[in-house]
Amino acid sequence: MVASGTFGYAREMARLVDCSRLGGILPKTITAQPRVGNAPWRTVETSAGLLNSIGLDNDGIDAFMEHHLPYLASIGTSIIVSIAGRTEEEFVQLAHRVGQTGQIAAVELNVSCPNVSGGVDFGTDPDACHRLVAATRAGCDVPILAKLTPNVTRIADVACAAAEGGADGVCLINTVLGMAVDWRRRRPMLGNVMGGLSGPAIKPVALRCVQQVRSVTDVPIIGIGGIATIDDVMEFLVTGATAVQIGTANYYDPQVSTRLIDELPAALQELGAATVGEIVGTLDSTR
Ligand code: DOR
Image 1 (cartoon, rainbow, N blue to C red):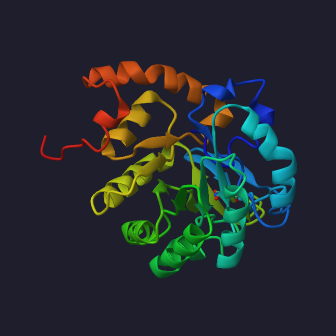
Image 2 (cartoon, rainbow, N blue to C red):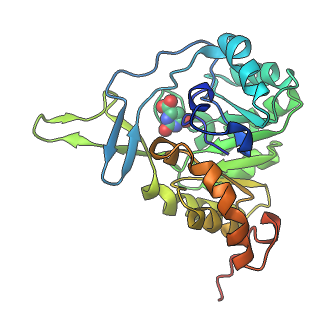
């Protein structure tokens, strides 16, 4: 799948990628109202990866339903809608509204945006996460995924809380809070000062999170974080992810995801497997 925020609303990618071949598309996180996002600069490439402080710039739920969802639904792959609310009630209403269209495969609750005020409130407190997922679950008929932040001490506690609240899966991970500095001008590179780090630098963090969550719960995990090659994909699968999302790599090569799909059967074969299910979570620390 392609990760939310890295593929727009898919329209702009259609001339570059055969989107119908993707396992799923997650359009940019949708909020109750349109948002213009944070002040520039909003992205900066560092030697360690990409930093962003977009600030949930998006067209809002009304425009999404009217203009974007019909297009997305026509592509012919699963659409998983990422949503973010400022309150539990907003999450519940957004999930209900997109869920009842009958056009989406799942809802992803973005409780992990590091770039807006309150963006990680539901992703850092296990009780709040549990309540949010349970409330959303009650009003929504499609599967619910919770996208979690690595910017916590115990991500496994949050993942368990999401699972107990009724989440059908957890997406690990959103970006790692970071910062870049222009020392000559004595200013931060990002208008919002701090931002979320993504790309290869965060893959070890993401794998660690998958491992920690896998060791305490069997809730399905979708791995995200620095995946750009088939080796990266396989590392996430054997560690315990049942699927993966590709994010930052899309900026450098929009066709990366379809290429990885093509490369998957040969990599599975190297482990004597024909299906992803045969290798998920087969990591053996005694080997
Ligand atoms: O790093 C991120 N940036 N994660 C999100 O969930 C949202 C995005 C943004 O819009 O700032």
